[in-house]
Length: 367
Image: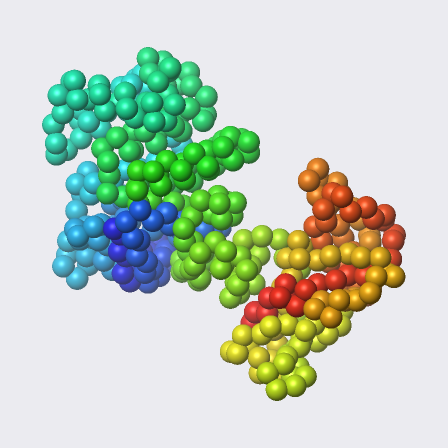
């Protein structure tokens, strides 16, 4: 439903530096929810705006369905209003002088292409209002709605023309945390039920992990890794991808071969037995061992060591109660590790513990 090949854009900043996106390639199948995830300035919104036709790339090709909408080789660019897109903006971008009904009806009344009768417009708007639970506010001026309702209006307006592709540019960033959690679920379920293809841009890892079928992590204008949320979280290829998708403990180390096809990594807190990808397993190679806080277990010093775990002795330096868990800092030699502990486990600051890390909880990436 969407194909991007060798997309490049360039902008010159006041300081003379040139930024943009570099040779971005991606494909979306029909009904797929794809998220571009990355920090501010990485190129994710520029990529989205290029698909929408708001930016003119330097080179590359973009196709929506079977229609090429931009091609530098063919010297072709299709205007935004002819691309059969729906767009949801970060700022809602709904008409403040119109009612909810009129905002949603706007694309049917003034859109280019198919003409709709007043009866058909009313029918389709009523169906969309019901779908997004807005039927009781259809006559209200849009500014009188809550933030969540305004975002639903923006989504309804984008969907009412049944677009080939839906573009969403950080649509939840202006909402409070509780409302974002609700709308993450609602948007995902709605687009699945309608089999809508979506390209979603965000810097929020929870949005990406909970909503996307696939994620493309961007940095400095490049997609540095792409995959399912599970694969990216459990098998990041760089420390940047690992840290952007969640909290990490990062330990520098050197690969050691203990036996044929058995490797370990020597780190400042001791030797880690790890599963190391073949391309990173050369003897003496400098690597990073990444351990997520939730993979660390603390046990009493009297506990019998588990052979499937790396075990070190440490001392608890800090405990913060977060409701569903404890955020714990534990010192192992000269290194402080961060651990996430279940709220049912009770330890005390200053207590000596064994720090147990499963072998499959150690991610080895290039240094």
